[in-house]
Each structure stands twice: as C-alpha cells, then as structure tokens.
Image 1 (cartoon, one colour):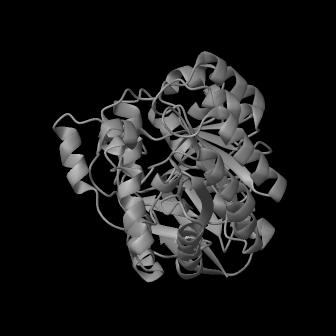
Image 2 (cartoon, rainbow, N blue to C red):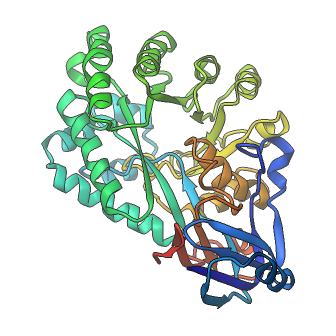
Length: 417
C-alpha cells in the first residue's frame, strides 16, 4: 500500500545519486522541485513534479494508493539526522550555566570538579531506568521537531559498569522509539578522578575491558574519543581508536574544540567517519580530512552556549569538505535538541547558506553515521523518512526561527508526529 503526497509547494530531495554525501559547492544543490509529488510505502517509490505523477502511475502500475495528501503551501524535506548527541545522562548543570554567564570558563568549572565530572557522579548513582527516562524525553522532543535519526553517546559514567549502563539505556531507546537511534561508545570522554594520576591505567581499562564488553553485547556502532587540551592526547586517542577498529567498531573524534590540537589530522589518519566540533581546526586538518573523506560535523549550539568562535564552515566548504550539522545535545555545553535551531545558528552566526545547512543536517548527517545509503535524502529505494513543514518556501525554516515549523514527521512511511 502506497501514499502519494501531491501539490507540494517545495520538495527538497538532497539527492546524491551514487555518492554518499554532498561536499564543497555540491552542498548548495538541494534538489528542489516546485509543485512536487512523492510516492512511498516504507521506501521512496517515486519523486517528481505533480504534473508528471499521473503519467507515472498509469505507466508503472505501482502498489495500490491508499491515501493522497494535498501538500499545497507545505515544504517536504528529508528528516533531520542529528549525528552527535549526549542525551543519556543524569543530574543537572543549570548552576554551571549560570556561572559561565558570570564569566567563569568551562575549563575552570571542569578543574573544580564540575563539567563532565559532575554529570559522571550523577550517572554513577542513577538507575538505568532514570537515565532512560531523560533520554526518552529528549529524543521524543527531537522527533517532534523533525529529527528522524539520532546518534547517542555514552561517556558520562567513566567506569566499566556505568558506561555499560549508559549503553544499555541507549539500547532500550533503540527498541522503544520510532526514530532511528545509533549508539556510540565514549568511554574516552574524560579521565575520571580516580585515574587522574594514572592515565595509562584508565586507557588500559578502556581498551582491554570496556571495548571488548561493548562489542560482545553489540552495544555500539562507533567508538569516540575527546582529543583536546586537558583531555586525551593524540597518542592516547590513537591507541584507543585503533583498539576499537581492531574490535570491529567504526570511529569518530571530538576534535579541536578547545584548541588547535592536531585532532582533525589524527581523525583523518585513522579514517574516522567524522571529526566533530572543529572550532580551532587547522588548514592542514582541513586538507587531510578532505583527502580521507572524513565528515566535518559542526555543532554551532555549543559554540553559542560557550561563547566561542564558530567553526570555519565556509573555509571547510571552500576546501571541498563534506560538512554536517548536529545539536551536541548534552547537559553541560549545549542543552538543546532542536535541529531547526541548529540551522538558524549555522546560517546567521556560522556563515552557512540555507542550502548548505539543509544538506548538512540531512544527507551529510546521514553520511556521518554511515547511513546515507538508507536515509538523509528523498531518493528511490531509501527509507521514507521525511518531514512536512508548514511553509511554502524552504528558506522559512531559517527565516522564521524560534518556532517549530514541522507539521508532520514520517519514518519508514509511517506518520509518527
């Protein structure tokens, strides 16, 4: 049984054909069709102009159409792919946010035992059920605002038991929720207090205990590491990532968020699927990432919250990188799950065009998760994951900011919002 959307004022396909992403100037081409039509069941069956829909249906005899929806005055585009979040945690850091507004730095708060370590202490004492409740609430909120695929990281436990607790909570969300949930192991988010003076021991625990257990229980697709000043060094990160690769995990990197640290260069050498943050990326890092095909995932909400310079998105695009956008939703540096707001920040403060931001939040977000052959664009054979926005022009998604313009959300051909 198929559904036909017709008279769509603007349909954005973000089509890539045989490619896996849009890089450089290609990000401007979002494949807009005016007065468009979309035919789908669980997958996209056909997309084109409404005037051609009748001829297609007569000539190709597709599955019986059970519903025809008039989308005049609406924009249809692929569901947002949020490829970097930390939505499983416990506790609150609202007080730290207030202190940062008073001028206290993120690094100073962390040195005082706050930041990641504050959330770590809350996670260690929380039940898995409590952690699931927080993640569920944030994921459902993201869904209502157009996110159809979301990556979720561990990283707030920093012990064998609590990291597995977080990943098992993510697995529960995978099983329960209608949006696609992709799990990432981030045991290398920080060094816990008990190993501050014995970094080698904690790295051994990650490599020899955590990663094997994660793989044995099939709890993650990716392994991530925070490579930056005050966190994991490049050699430490390389050891962890190589262990993960050898165990069958794909790898990501928190890279160059706080300083130009050489993390982007390392991510490229390790063939990471993405390097994320990149506020202080070097030109060498940009060039190496282009050569390796590593996706540059930018998190403008974090720069906004921490009052840091935005990542050099236009420089990356001019150098031919594939740029993705994500929320970085987390309790400390960006407590926001709305991808529509990410588009606004990326354009108005990050220097991206509306078209680049749409490509970055859909097909390139999917590429940053290795899923662009399944979702992220409206092309025949891909999952029918899309949103119907209550605007006739896609630019209004950024122009009319601060509101939820998503009217409906469909995942695998089923209306879920």
